[in-house]
Length: 205
Image (cartoon, rainbow, N blue to C red):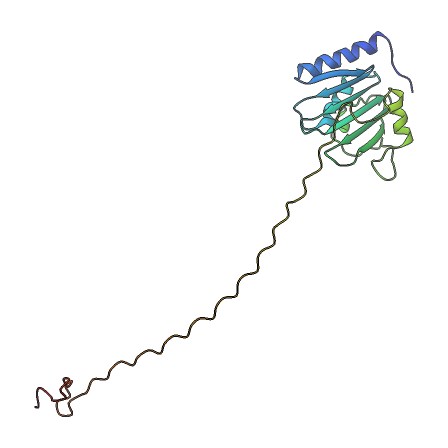
């Protein structure tokens, strides 16, 4: 794989750094031909691909670390394009593509992230291959993890729910006292009026 060198290569890298900083990103050069981009973005793969696209035919590596601590490494050495992305504590996702002559890493078909006919398949899918590792080695990268990057802490274990105390058995309800029958008034057999307590009808005598 041929790597472009000389003033044109250096100019392309400088232009890429200037453009990225103009967008408000922090850009460092941890080693020759490699950029490290950090900023308040959510999609590190897109940022790294666009940065590599600015370098045109210049072979380079671009790390991008998002505000969520997700990262992508783009290794570009025409025609080979390798992207490695890690989100959270998930596994690394490797993709290796060989682009046609007129395509750069920021081609719309690449930025959309869908499959293309230019994929170099791997088994299992999205795993590192010897060919992909060779592309990284060609630009001087041995480990795809960004320098100084720390993985997110493991998710906290759910708090144990304290066992409930057994409910006390309810006491049996006390039986209700029987209701007293209402008194029945005595009636005078002659006038059918209620009799007083004396038992003598006030009307009939």
